[in-house]
Structures are given as structure tokens and as C-alpha cells.
Length: 326
Image 1: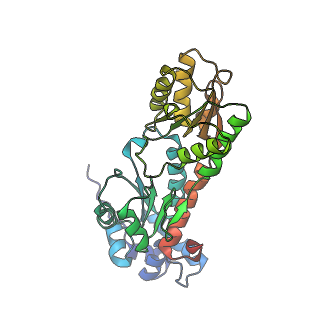
Image 2 (image 1 turned 120 degrees about the horizontal axis):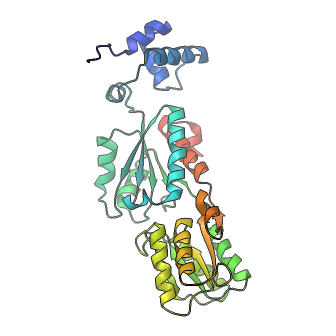
Image 3 (image 1 turned 180 degrees about the vertical axis):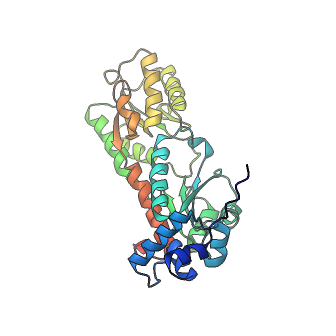
């Protein structure tokens, strides 16, 4: 059966709310500088909800230069199904978008994507701003986008003085994890990065681990340092290789909890006890960390708060609000 119900228009909303179509446009596009009372804004939104009116994205873009869409670029693609930190950040970012009347468009790109990737995304996908998860220092396309003044928020660290970043205290967290293990008397420490070594332009957590060993006058052993591939399975395989080489470590610093949980499985499988034979410290404090066997010792990272901060900062930049410049 064909549904012949006519689609509601902004004119219908204006008539029901008793306002002009311009007022409807300002309210539904959340134009803050317009002198419209809260009562009128509520009346317009109520009329739009009752009529089931949904602004057409293309029309919004043509009328006001805005699409009402925030982009999220995740690199690399293989993070999506396995990285628990990403899921928490994505959830809170989507919450902010829903609260502010924005849609969220998720895209992916490789570390070797050409600079044009950003231009194509911004133009073809009609997004008003972009959040980037998976920041590479040596990325001319991203640097150019940041310095152009386009609303972009980074999850991670970038050297551009113009960048707006939301990041965890990686340096402090890994330093504290390593110092904790050293304080317990460990001198043979392993490290498994959450990504392949050399894959991310910036391996901050690994560098911090190495510096912590140096400060404690403990030898950095390359044979005890492995890269992962974001998944628990890669943490498991990396730990198996470390153990198979002989002279196992007495402690492991993992680049994130997902890697740590996989490594713990390999340690148990090899007949070692945790933490009696090999102590393990993770990073992120994902929800499943406390269900590991034994419960994983980890550094807490506020993934939900970071996701909200990304969304709020990006939308503030899109709207030109003062807090975007803080």
C-alpha cells in the first residue's frame, strides 16, 4: 500500500507555531544570535515534532551553509570492531550530537591517505566539522585542514599550534604504570603497544615507557617490546612471542586494556601466574577490565567524558561560540 501522506514543510511548522518561516529556520538550525525567545523556540520545536517535520539536509546546506552533520574520522578501519575505548567515545559523541540536533557521519581512512582525502570528505559529505581519532603527526592533509580554520577536533596530540585537542594524560598514565611496577621491584619489564610499531606516526606511550626505564636505570630490552594490532588476539600473539624467546619478563605494561587482556590469556596458557610470576598493567579501564582473570590493574581514561568534550568543542567551533577558542 502506498503512503500518500504529504510531507510536512517549514511553512506548515510556521503556521502551526504562529511564526514566520525565517523564525522556523533560525530555531531548527539553532542560530544563536537570532533574537528569539525561549518560549518561541519551544513552540517551534513542539510544532515540528507534532508534524513530524525533518529539515532536508541539502536544503539546510543551501539555505544556511550548514548541513547539521558532524564527521568522525577513525583511523585505521580495523579499530572499529575491536577497540573498546573507541566504542565508549563514540557513544558519548553520538549523545552530544543527538542533544544538539546534529547527525554524526563516521568515515575511515588509512595512515597513508593523500591530503585530498580531507578536502573530499569536507566537500562531498557536507559536514560542518570533523573529529579525528587516529592522529598522525606527519599528515600534511590534516595539518592543512587545521590551519585553514576549519572546525576540527583531534583525539590525540598534534604539533600544530592551531590544533584543538582532547586527549588523555598518556605521558602521566604510562609513566605512573611503569613506576608502579618498578616500585614493586620489577627490573625486567615488557611493553606491548596497542598498534604495530612504526604504524602510528607518534608512539607516545612507548616513548614514555622507555624514558621511565631510563630514569630508573633499568635496561630497555628490544626483545621484550612488541607491537599489537588493536585487538586482544594481537596482544595474545605478541605475548606468546615474548614468552617463546626465553627469559620471560616479570611485568608487562600494555598499551591498552584490550591488548592486556589478550596478553593475560597467553601468560596463563604458558603456565605462569598473574601477578605472582608476571604482573600486568593495562591502560584505559574499559568496562570488561574488571572481569579479566584476575581483574586487570589499569589506568583509568575518561572515554565518555572525552567523547562529550570532542562533540561540544566541535559544535562550539562550528557555531563560532567563545568557548571554542579556550
